[in-house]
Amino acid sequence: VLSCVSSERRIQVFGEVAVFSHDVASTVSVDGTVETLAERESIVLENRGGTWLAVHEHLSARS
Image (cartoon, rainbow, N blue to C red; front, side, top):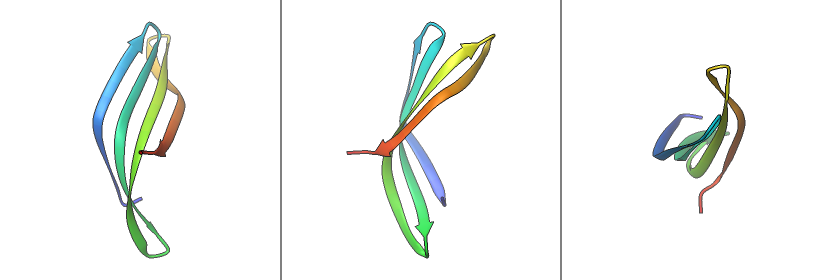
C-alpha cells in the first residue's frame, strides 16, 4: 500500500456501539504495477469500560 485517502466519513453512535464508515482511495503496488482502488470501509466499535475498541471491520470495492 502506497497511500490511502479517506473521504465521506460518518460516525453513528448506538449507545455502547458505534459504526464508522468512509470511502477509501487506496494506491497499491503489486509486482511493480501501481493502481488506485475505490473502496468502502465500515468499522464497528464497542465501548468497553470507557474505551472504544474496534470489534469488526469490513472493506469492499465501492460500486
